[in-house]
Amino acid sequence: MTIHEKFRRLGIDNAPGQESLQKAQTLDLRGEQLAGAPVDFSHGDVDAHLPTPGSFALYAAGVEEGGAQAYTPYRGRNTVLAYVAEKLSAFSGAAIDPEKNLILTPGTQGALFLAMGANMVPGDKVAIVEPDYFANRKMVEFFGGELIGVPMRYGETRGASGIDLQALEQAFADGAKLFLFSNPNNPVGCVYSHEEIAIIAAMARRYGASLIVDELYARQVYPGFDYTHLCALTEIPDNLVTIIGPSKTESLSGYRLGAAFGSAEIIQRMEKLQAIVSLRCSGYSQSVFKTWFSEPEGWLEQRVLDHLAIRDAILAVLERTPGVSARPTEGGSYLFVTIPELDVDIHQFVRIVRELAGVIITPGTEFGPQFTHQFRINFSQDKDKAVAAMERVMAVLERYRRQ
Image (tube, helix red, strand yellow):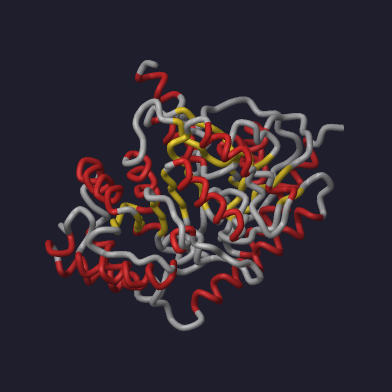
């Protein structure tokens, strides 16, 4: 593979927030533009949901402190590591030594890159869920791995993710050395059952495989659903990394804060990789970790309920449109919407929606090439604007529905 081919396969034109890179093309625009406030469903709106109280004051204090906060050790400032380890230990049920088992990173995206780089070499077989976070398959490509897709039949079950555990075991039997998945799942928003998590852990241990568990939205699980932290189980694989951070749930995405904890040897490798990639999690931003898990009483619970109300309002719009469906989100702020046959393909439809409705959605193919009749939205938005935007998307869909 040439370097040009390698990066061509990492195409980002359809990735969230990258719409400006899309090449101009002639679109089959039917009907007039629909008026309404523009909405970008490719990511959450931090203006609609304000950041954790006190976050900017802590950031400013870090700036005022200067060099001691700007140039921390590569893993993070010791006082911040100690704080984060204590909070994450209480939250996850895992015993986290801040000196051995934890690293702070430039967002959870940075943690994911470091974890992948610390767990695979070219030629390794890597299992990922389909659908799952759009960057997962691209990182397997970048690091020269062989991707093994594990289906998740999310539309056929409730109270579980629907992951095909037989396919996962076959992947391990066929030599997969690493399994990566998000819980709650992005883009579907389903939460893995305790049974599924326990089976995954047991399989990985039995086959000597490594696990990377992306728990970014573990704090935003809706009422009525139980959440199992794999890292807290009695029997876990020797090589395990859990990724989490204050991000969209807390509206702190702009600070680029992430954390990874797990096996000491893997964390050490991640530190060595961070030393040549980004040096450290943004020094000034590390101060903001002190708001994480220390929000005012009831603040997080209300944030979750606010998002639940937005989810339900958007689902009501979808349910009124024949042939359109989405599994109700159990955790996080995503909906993976299935649509009927149209006169245009999903990539054209996404661009048409942007032109006619002023709404940005992400094509399902970002989460697996087979998802040609799906799109993803992040509903962490202003509720009224989000509902109106989805109504416009459905109105545009009706113009292109195949007869």
